[in-house]
Length: 608
Image (cartoon, rainbow, N blue to C red; front, side):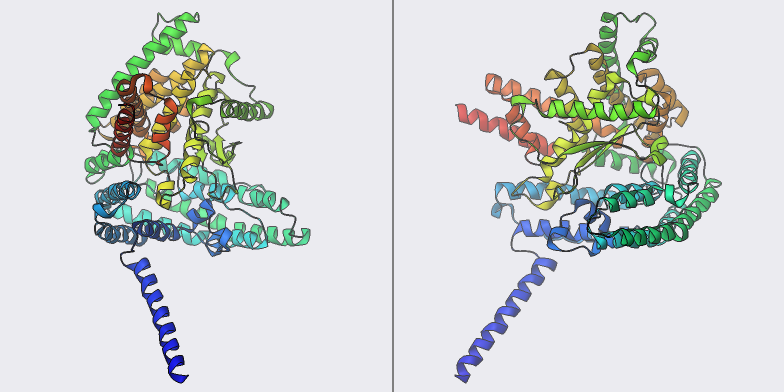
């Protein structure tokens, strides 16, 4: 019996050790299955970003919530460690032989290879960024994140909210450290960008604690949780008030003081060309955002040609609608945009109506896409106003994805700072771009994909995601959702806006345009409100290359659709083409072309 027990004990020990060795290999070595490798890289990367974990909200269902009390590390050291990590994992990926992989696994490997190679190219320029800017700096991204992403379903979630408020000074000190590191290497934002942020901070801190979005958002969320007593809610709100007064506001003031001093050492040159190796950094940015090796000159000329083509189409419609076009595009579009019938009342009631009408537009197309798609997303989308404290420097609209577990719907956020920036004839196109069948539709489908590694559910290829959203605008017109000729003018104006971006982005960062040159060009060629144009130009200044992704991506999708139609003729089905584009998640444009080529060949073989 003792001998038997001894062998049983040895077997148990050996089994435990085997499992331990296997687990260690899966987490640190080369996992047996390549999908385990992909998921490991995605999980390890996301686990380093607690705010991302809160936004995705997929660990909470397993009772894992510790990350909800933490904030992201944004130190230069963390950035370097992340690039080092990617380099090591890239070496592991290369050990998987293509012959041993399934078709889907091979596609995942191609996408991962692309990302690792891109990270390798970007590493020398990882600090060629402006971590504090009017769009996405910590001063506005933190309150936006806490309002839109930090969920409160019980008392622990509320305490985590307070914890994050207390930890904000650390995050702001890390931000200042990151700015100092860049300053030492000759990377300083233009003065006018720094001033925008200083003004924004002043606007944020001038309000009483009870009027601050961080307090009001917490109060609103607590009111929706019945499991917390009224007394406990008041205790939590008192803690929040203390944290905002003693931690949050002083952190903002410290950053403002630093930025004001930094501004004295900066200048008003707008382009990346002014930075060390700025031309090379801009080319890498274009590669990252467009997924191509197009040069700035090529993109600039494509933009000029597209601007001329689209303006000609718009002029034809305007002429048909009785608007005088004899004085040129600028005068004609100004005549259109000056008509009060195209705007809502400049009041609280008018702004509420804008939100309602956007929701109506989305609901209509969502219910009537017909047979152009045979794939549908599950997550809902809501229309909301961009927080007022950041409206002045925010774009016209943006989309925040739904939580992975659908505990929070997608959000189509609309800028209502200037109602004249929201003409009625442009609303349909904007809703189609940001919601359905644009960003919300595509991103939700990616998140809901089954049988693919986690990283492929994340829409991280800008040319694909923005190209799809711009394509969605045109598709909505083709499907008959823009019956009013002026709505079609709005669609063309939106496409024109994206074509103008090709010209302006490359103009600023490669051709040394000034900020004012870019604003003047956009005013002359878009007919947009000057408040929107100024915000847009300043966006291109702090996000070089990103604005080029939209039109480049759209043109590629249209090119691939035309290629499919020509090859398949009457056998072409729009819904099946859309399946190819959407059912693989976001991919680089060259891989997207490979997928479409494979689809064409498969259909040809099927019918021969």
